[in-house]
Image 1 (cartoon, rainbow, N blue to C red):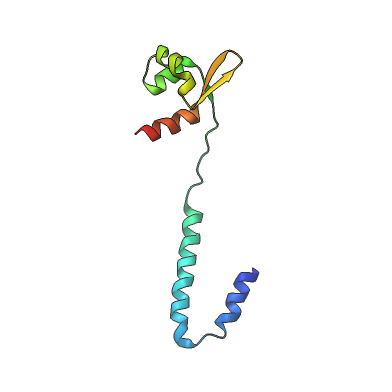
Image 2: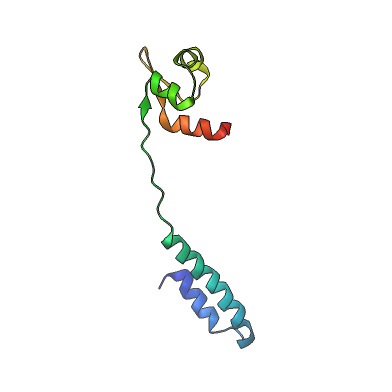
Length: 99
């Protein structure tokens, strides 16, 4: 048994009988929380993909010209050499903040 649980078990043996219902309620909260964590699906982490100008404009609902003009101000812009690319995860975060 894990040491923290062993210490709880040891202290249960010393509790007064009238204190046991409160302890059982607290243990039920711990049990329910553990069960909830087990049954929750693990979140799927999407890989960050670099998008070109056209895809970025489409995702944002703006023109290609707008993306070119504002690339320096967009927080998800990634410049590789002379090429402009845009983080898909960054675009998603940007869109969710703007809503």
